Image 1 (cartoon, rainbow, N blue to C red):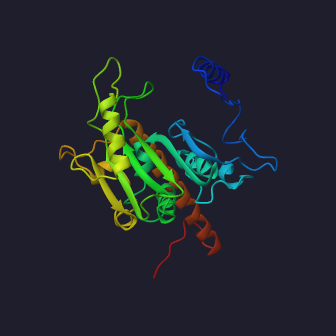
Image 2 (cartoon, rainbow, N blue to C red; image 1 turned 90 degrees about the vertical axis):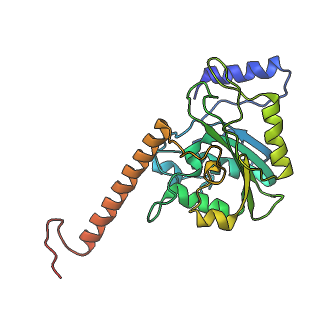
Image 3 (cartoon, one colour; image 1 turned 60 degrees about the vertical axis):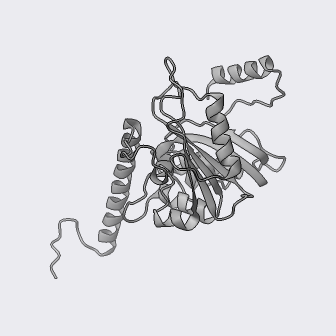
Length: 274
């Protein structure tokens, strides 16, 4: 909870003459926008840029009184898909949402043998036909990181059922100091691709949910839209998150193995011969 951010948000609303209901609180643990029955309020549109790869204990997902995490609990190393499910629970039956996340949110876990929490949640979202578009942003747009981000668009009433639009806007930026930025022309190009549902060489692709499944639910636009033929370079921040997630999966597998050994009445040091 950051009172300074709350104060700045209210000040911005006043400066820009916006009618806004801004509340201070812990959005994940104690959502402030609830109806008279205590359930989450729902809205037509939801947008957010939550902290990337935020860490929460597993108990938060497992004991949620608002029933937000129906598609699965994300790993404690990254709350990206926790935030997505919170936002989804805040949408009404015709709602749409757009959320800015790190690039790994749409690809982590794909290609792994066995189960992976984030990949499994992505799979559930795809199978529910909720994901409308994924937009890969250029590098060095944000003030707290040089890494690129993605905008994930969720729509409960998709215009094109069974399809997703993937836009690789990585090359669409103007150099600035200290940060890059999108010009009006870049924004118009991206908007035209989205509204026209266009597949354009080097910029966008339209894929089916079945194609996403064949790629193990990797929804990174750079996987489907090549801009220079080069290999994708993993940002350091993303590599560290993947390392933490792999360590968490290893620890879970070790706990499961110990439980099996205990049930079988074997000690970990026992020799088993066939």
